[in-house]
Length: 518
Image 1 (cartoon, rainbow, N blue to C red):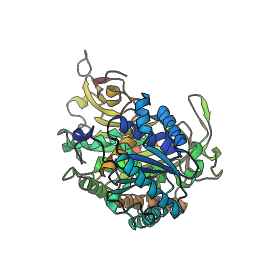
Image 2 (image 1 turned 30 degrees about the horizontal axis):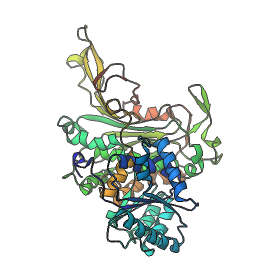
Image 3 (image 1 turned 135 degrees about the horizontal axis):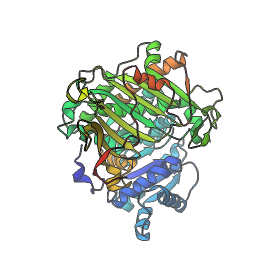
Image 4 (image 1 turned 180 degrees about the vertical axis):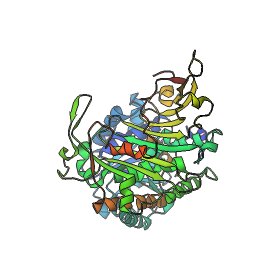
């Protein structure tokens, strides 16, 4: 991994960026703003070009107007002065392309040669496929047959999730791509790996001497990972009804965060060494061996009508484009075990869902408590120590410990300290897509998923999906605006634990170490 302090203002190598799906929502909300932020920070020099590609007709001026509108609405940097915008916008061109028409790709190759000459680009190509997965293979073949991979520079393919919908489809997709691109040229995006606090997990663990020695089953009682959303499926009902929380969130985001928490220290800060350790975690996940075991450890839920802040909310089956008899899960919770020497016996509780009370992504590490009936524990009910990693929307690290209550003898209360990154530098931290596009342009693959990571994750979730298809697990319902099915609390209570409050709901006694009070 490259030292961040050395490349913060270093521009990535010049390249042509091809954005397939350039008229789509992802490009508008994330990709265009990310490119402008990189340009503002000097991480994109003048030797680049962006080619927007989609079926609908657009002139260059119309395309640039779309880019400008997206930046003004979604970018953390606003357009600014006209000179900066004009210089940036002239690097953007648009081409209407039928991805099944090889002649169109040959025409694209001719356009690319013109852009290379105009902006002095050294033949580097970055292909960003913001498309449906079934189109990855055909587009890759046409890139090859259209001559776009024959330049003197490097070629890199960036693809979005979902990477297949089960292990077999993922294998088929990977085989198609491997006919055209080498594994080291394929950058599979999981945008959660681009979030600042997810990337901070490595530093927190491996750069602090008082964490890593305690990072094991001798000192940690359980780990809780929450990824909650307040929204329903909105306009994605048609897609979501075929996917569900298991495929949409667990196979990628949840298991990636679990792997970051549970991985062993890599031998070097090298992308392959880091990803090797993540794969070892995924291989160590205890597989559910029978449907009864899945029913014991896994909860699938679906929201029904409810309320949030006095506002009525519709049920999932009443959402647009959703089957009125759908059994698709909008909520997933599970007790997961990593069967290796470090983590044997420690439960990892993961939960994700839609129409929950708050939007947050947090990891809570609960440490084992001090022995009962010894010293202060005789007279006080001591709370366990917690380390909380706040990923989104607030970013920071929160530590909870026990201290004497001021002015009172032998009374102990929980207090907290927090590094609030959002408070310290505001909400202007780099977006995940900025970091990931920048990394892809530099060939830095640490925070992209390798094929064996993808396949191991699918192997784990396919067992669950298969049991659900057989009808072996019941679908539980929860009111929209609640924290999910009641069974979710019982899952932890069976082990003597409970879900810890998230999103700052448990901050009565906070000592701020940076950033000041909220």
